[in-house]
Length: 502
Image (cartoon, rainbow, N blue to C red; front, side, top):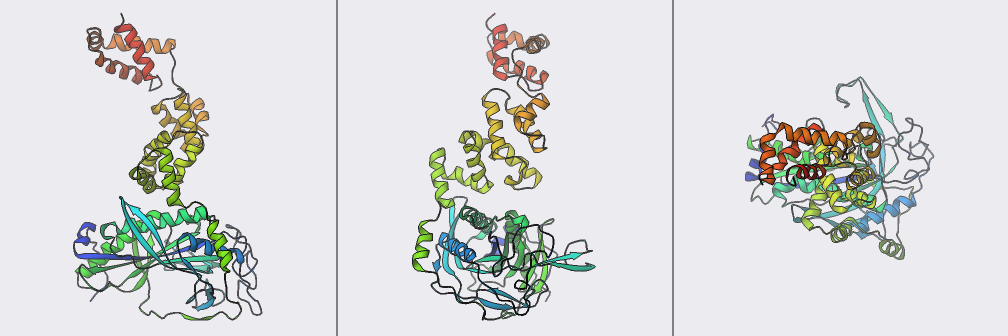
């Protein structure tokens, strides 16, 4: 029976017959100055193969030495996730032969990782989901394959491949969840919420830059479906190296729809890795993983075991910074907002943006208004994350300040924001360059008010006759004439002086 299909089942229909189960494997490049087992630099963007040495290339006679800062960072991550910290752990050799593994094996932790049995609670639409953490272990990253000549950047169709070993040996933490059942229709959102919350924790700990576009944070998304009521979980697929928060959600959603179509057609799901395509939000087959024992592990003979001192671990625990969940609770109180309103900020990825905007001088209410309103709409229209917009919290605070000072109104502020996003400078500079300042009670405004009255005699007469609410039409006429540069309150006052008081 075929295991592939060109058809996708409607997402809502999937949930009528199948129960999804997820598992997430998140890889985090640590922000250490040197690699995991040698002294080579980890600086991003260097010329290919200029940050290598005999140790990270696995040349004969070279010996590794573990990076203490990487071990500390891994323990910090484990503590933040409520994990049990091992009193004794060791490294192993994971043997497999890919061209981006110069040694022919990866030095990693296998049966004795540094951190086990933690959890992370995430909230989606007011409901809390507990994601159980199976393990947090430390290893080294691989090099990077560059496939040249094809249209997709993948090996299929490429003319030739190049390998950059600068990344080989960079400290890499892998955070592995237990299977996550019970999320139902919220499964894609729970997956995204988990990676989002994990990323915020890593930023708070300061252990990684977690820039997904640079590969600092990569997620393998395991997805399976089982018929509702089944006592066994379905066969999983592993979508590799998903590199954006939005794409984590899209990968789960697509795999649910694809697998449902295969099962509905009487097919079976192949246990395999799959590639995620950012442009279409779809996945395609990678390599089969039907053999569970496709790696051979044995203890690394050139490294001594790691035995974290209990007092040291206790000191690290006591020194943990305020974690994101606790910080959100505190900010909710300070800003006077409800848990639901804070959830909106979390879902939009706007908590830090609003916080930084408030720190730059804006009121919490105005900061939320702009990030969740106009800026969120622009991010959605452009298909980008909110934090990727070309505007800083300080610039948003400056824009809000110009509104508060009466220099511009909301309508003009949106035009000023256009200029900021276009790279024309800070808001004040854009306002000046584009001539966006609110028009004061000048001769030009007086003429516009008089013209509105003369051009709308019926409306003017209604206002004189006591229907003061009709004055809104005249205000609108003046705002149109002045292209939104007039202050509406000033215009209304001037009209009232002419029509109501006379």
